[in-house]
Image (tube, rainbow over all chains, first blue to last red):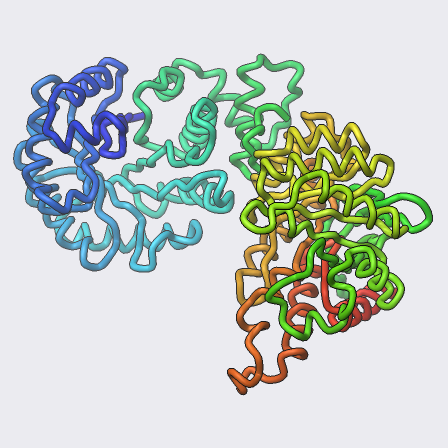
Length: 292
Length: 315
């Protein structure tokens, strides 16, 4: 699993002002901490950056590169800012992301081609969020077709099927899993990634890691290549690195229909088991899902 | 091979709860299939209709809604009796409009006295609906619960923010709570869990999914109620196996489409007929989604819904 640390984000209470005021310290400290936590890429989310986006991205990339040589995932919808970041990034950056909106896809893909960067294909179409696994498949095919036409091979495309919160729409949570199971056949050679933490959006903060970790392991079952994650969830990093094989195995067994006897499981295992039941739609989510 | 009609497989059952006390107490719930799917399961207790009574004379009601209650709208006891004697109400819902801190802001003691008077004057189950202002509702329902001990009132809305205080009063004085959440199935389940953790017994809980009338998002309420029943009946979700109550009348009668007189907009047609039909149709939608108790206003709308319930539950 390739892990992309999500923490440098304009929405953060410390990073937002630091980006705005061009204060390098909080950003560099966070970048160092993320690198030490063991993620592979650092996401640099500067938001839509409508004003002075190019200058901001250039500054942010240089600021982070002063303290780490981890490759960067440049996260903005502003294509001019994206290009500015690509120009100064030293270590093969990742474009996060290009959607299928007609006015965005082609210019975005041309950037990827020009700078020889990998690109995250956000399966967000002209009509917005895909409604099910089939629409995701359709968007994937359209994206790859266009990318190949412009000379970008499948190996440089990371498909992001868009994770939505379990407390909003369980069918979308299931559709994402279903799609991930199909992806290998639809798009041989393509990579994949997800904005993992979105699964737990709306859930009380201290409980979010259980949903994030479990959903990642469930997606891993279908070959998930990478995830954009909270770099400081050490357990999640362990799971991704194969250091907790018994948990991964348990989750996958439950996905295959096994109904484990909770009394034979450890407290930690019970939490994973309950979370699988919620994320597979077998049991309806509520904030107290771990207690019942 | 003969054609076989596909059948839904049900694994759960809605809990049966008793509302009120004495001869006129009613039982709701008990369903083992989707609403009115008598060909697939049981609906042992037909849905019930509670008639609205306000604890102060309503303002801004259209003429059509006031007319059936002419002469009693300033006296909740007389109003409740009229609903029972003249219109055959099998339940009453007393709306505590006067306690609204942004309105008359009547004190808890005075409001509770009115509830007690109504409760003593009638023998059908009494629902008492507050203002959804947490501080005020806590104050009012504590007094109401104590004063009406033994009546098994149905009190609410009880929300996450005041469930502990009102829930505790309900446990202490044996009343049923209306667990109310804002059109969200996950939050509905969560509140039921919290009430259970607090010690409110299952047989004292009824759910309010928050509803609105036709044209004002009834489809969202419908969808949430439908999913509640699917989870309860086909996924054995115990925390959603509760009867559902819908406070629909006030949502319908406050809308522009109901209130606007024909003289102002002739193409809208007769205002009375319009109001009655919008109330009846909204109520019918909610019945089909799984409502066990409907809070309604106009006797003509109620008559239409009663007929539909009878037709749909006759085997």
